[in-house]
Length: 459
Image (cartoon, rainbow, N blue to C red; front, side, top):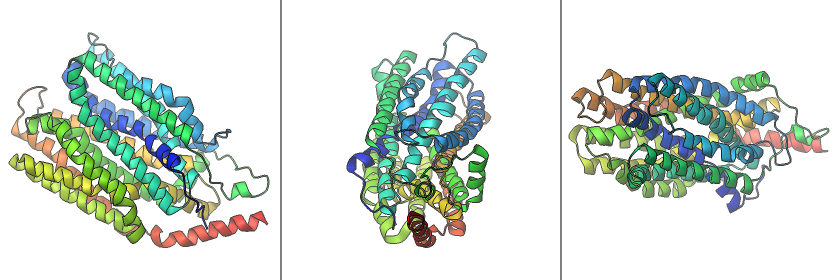
């Protein structure tokens, strides 16, 4: 009924390595706030507000980027060319983030931070990530192949994030530990990001044609921004995906955005950032590679989302108890538990936008892969900005002083951001899945109808 032939290993790899900009984004979310506050001397509250304002622009730019992708037509397809065109610029933008003028006024420093942060986040990362995310719906409609693509995406995205976060401090210290060392480290991260994006372009292919492209002249109608936005809003699974991804990503980003502060100040050992991320890496890879796709095969996406969310909530609870007791072995156990239970929720979550694209075509005969993929990127970046703002605000409100012993109220607030807050957000996500998600049952009807339309119009 749908394209059943398997994607090649190179195509799966291409989709995965295209997630390296997301890994760079995670590293930026985890370390840039500390660079601004502890190395440049910028006020935490001001930086947090800058992050949030930037993410408002960024959320809008995601929807615009989605429409641009939907209107693109080249010999390479509609999504792939953006990976070629922006592969090198996005790496350069990562490096520029740390070149804040050291001796300038606080206003000048904030302007530079705002401009370079938005160059990366609102423009280049937006276009690259929307285009890369759109590829899933353009490469295959086979649910198992989509699960495999999601598996590789999560593996490279989270794996790259964890490796990057693990090596960041050792790399910075090895380079001298000063501002120049931060600049060297981010230049390395930027170079790796560019290589990943260019390889994603080179190895991927767009296979799927819409119902529109099988009739008449075989040309898909270009969709205006407002038409695309209307189609987006009318599709319940786009809205569901937007909210679900926002909650999951906000949970992840609160945890990752506060982890450097948690380990350095609450646990008095900043190198735990390296050791615990490495402890988490092996179980995470195992879960993504060997648990996510089998869970979807056996139980479907709804139950897989339940299984993964439940495991993550338990892991946060364990780490929250470790924060109260100062128990590092318990903290390590909670970290490993988070890795083991990640696969089912992460793999399922990453296939939701492509499913929503199919459902939208079922309703309207229009496929909006670009606008649809902007669901993931918009939710991810808005949640990252809000998480960064929340960390900055909480630190400011509780009397945080950089490079000093923190008060009990500050350490308790950091522990809430690190563990209990993320757990609460995932409880809300499970409630949403329970109340809204029905696509496991609806999908056979959707795909049969789409296939009938293509066969009918091909006669």
